[in-house]
Image (cartoon, rainbow, N blue to C red; front, side, top):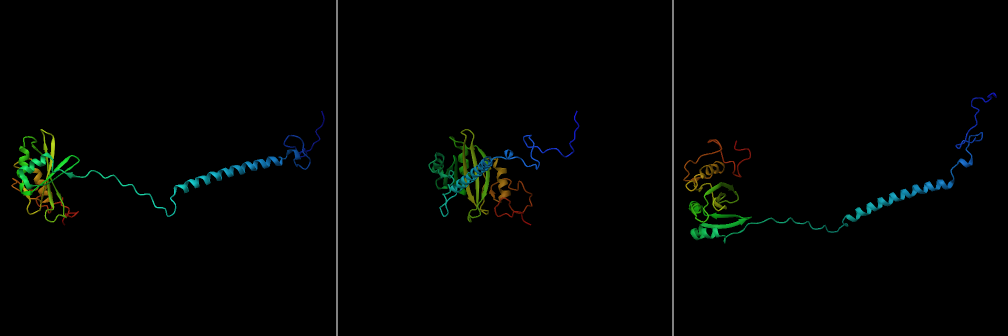
Length: 241
């Protein structure tokens, strides 16, 4: 066996391919990438950059195309479709029947999405209601509701009493309306429909409308000493202090 005479640190430098390099450690010319390979890699990177720029430019062009030109008029705003409106119901069979029996006491009639409304002169409301309740063809034997609406802009008659009538046998409805003011009030229909007792008391309580002939007209929801009528549109938000 031969003796190992090499000293530490005296190993010959090796090339990447495993062959010994020269004593200076510099790789041989064969281990350096060719200039053509470097040029190909640079060209590939340059092509990728150009593709990215082209995509950005295309996006900018599409966004610019969507924007209206400077000074160009804006497209008109599409108007919302108008809903149904009340129509004249003077020729409605029920209205014609009322006009035949009460003449000028029937002020006007309108129909809105199948709902018939008839405005009656204040002095004739009781006899009109009694006529409709006893009518043989369409007996309106049920007072489904009695309420009030306040229109402050109507100086002479700011309150409108509304009677919603229903005929159970014929399944028909009609709405009667009477205009009045705080002083005149309106006649009570408790003699036609006894259930009007509590409905008229509620209107009196919340609107202050007097019902002439009511058997027990007093507040229904609020204490007797309550000041004012809260459902009037001129009533203070926080009440009277």
